[in-house]
Image (cartoon, rainbow, N blue to C red; front, side):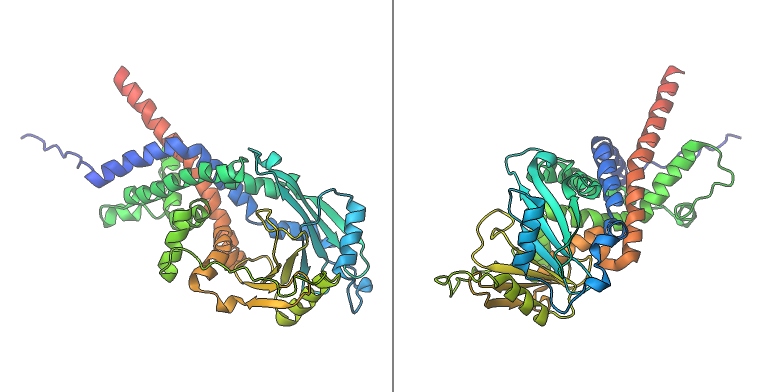
Length: 402
């Protein structure tokens, strides 16, 4: 009696092409996915680490606290004299917590540069005791580990405008890899499903099988958070992604543009106390906020002259999601516009929250831990995936020889 041969069922068309795309994309962008994932994971706990390392400069001594801090102009002059920097101070961040120091920032870019170290001309943070003007600490952020990690993650240390595409395109391919990976993982039946959710290494001794399980099982668990990370990442890289988000949330592809408010007091000479007037009113309007930032050099991020003084108010420490905007006349300090977070459209709120979602801080410390673990798993996927491919390649080579 002849034995029946059970032929292995051929994979479906979808699984066949998913496997090919998964492999091709993985070999093409695996090294970039590894670098971007690792640098992003290491960046996650930046605020917590800096909070510990810079505790002595972030907080002022209780005995120095007085009822009224020195004027911003006075503090600005003290910083300028002591730092002796040719470039003007860019901005000051003022905390609502009276126990904290002010942060004066020097920041300027060279648009013609091609890499991070040439593009960032200066990025220096100066911590100042607002009650006596004492400089508590000066940090050259340009060469600090976290801004460098951020630049690696964002642009592989290339110029920002160029690098975001160099990273953005591989991330789009990584999204395709995640989708094809889920298709390949998806079990045919209940029996197969049992082995896809957990490690069963009791009778497994070969490293190849363990490596396969690491790639397969960890990849599945990480894939859903990794999709959120990837989509929120390419939001920064491609305008069409940003427009798609905005359209889905508000029915309009673009966010409403803020109209420039003409200064009613432009014929007046600027008051020396204009920054203090803006700070005083901001504190009164947003008592429960975390901090607010005032530009001091009269220029915006693109280097163009500001018609007024825009003040950004941050609702929570270490987050950008809850943001309110104020505009003051740059001559008289009169309030021209007040746009609290509550009045923003859903699309505008998401635009403010996207960075926090991408970094995990939107979901608090628990979110950061999950994001960190997911980032490490994503870092491992190109390695375990390459080893699977290499093992199969060697196996095919041995078969051909035999």
